[in-house]
Image (cartoon, rainbow, N blue to C red):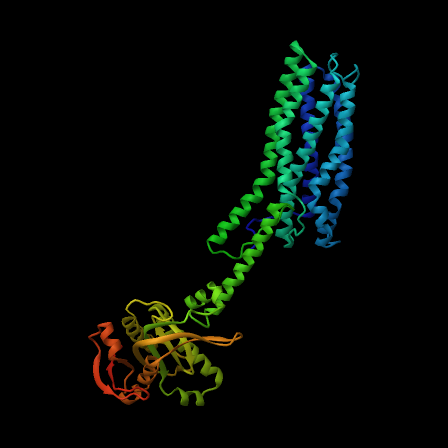
Length: 497
């Protein structure tokens, strides 16, 4: 799943938005001209000032913007690949600032110089001082350059988001610095108004000082609010998007991917986030796939304990061991084609394995048409003897209700024994297997085979029955078990009990 944002933007719309972003400073400049004309009641300077602004900001910036957006437009038209536009794309805000500075600085210079003598651009007779002119030039030019940077950064945010959504591409070039952006913005906001006021105090006095300082204070507050809006718009969206992605991952969604919309530390962090989520997704896939071969909890323990190099801790514990075997399956497998045999086994195992796991057991191995399972080792299982008996009874009931391919009928035999077992990981560096060893395991295997002798479906040793406190089991007697020194007391377990 990609970043959940529906976008259906064509090439023209994306390019047009860049021109609109670059036109915003002209709109702000036009608003300042109208305010200037209104304050000084000088409608005669409106057209000259607007014409000068249009010549530099509309024509000059428009030409510069055309060349800056051209590589991106060519990519959208399919003429070049994404690698060819990464540098023009990531440097778009900085290059846009240069275009704005080149066009705006001469324009504001002409305006400021024209104020020194009565003429078509002058609304008042009172000429400003050179200190006032220099401070105004510095602050106003810096304002429009800074405004352009964050407006185009906000545009780039949307552009990269659209490219990611439409083409699945992301920025991988990171040369910007977030601290540099914010440092320059904070320095400007902190000192721009102070510089204008200091120039007014040095240059004027009386009513002129009050008027000039009032205008500069109002302009500084308005400009700061406007700049703050665009800074927030440019920087808040990537952070909010990253936060949303983290929440999605915390809820278990490893398919989320985020667009990288800047070349600074935030963009770099977003890129690493995508790599991290991809790694988590692969780990979850590995765990899910691994869990199909071993118990899911065992798989989680193996994958989570890197210090052991993929080994389950060797341990000795009391456990209840279970062996199963299908009655007459050898003859059945000889009569049927391999595909049908496999299908029957899959239904059989798909029926009994969930039952074992539901009761806290672990399937350690599939042995032909049977399996070997354990309760309380390697995973702890409270009252494991009772859990083993309950699982055996439920397995028989589930198998009786199951439907097998070819309408065959299956009967399974189950043997249970409780005793001390040793859980170990054996094998080589390239291949390992977790298994249980000990006399208790051998006895459980022999008990399963004794079902043939007693014509039973479930047999359990006395150690299992007594530990479980199960009074529904029927005692058969003491039997000799091959490989075991003394006799073993066995019980018949009724599946319906």
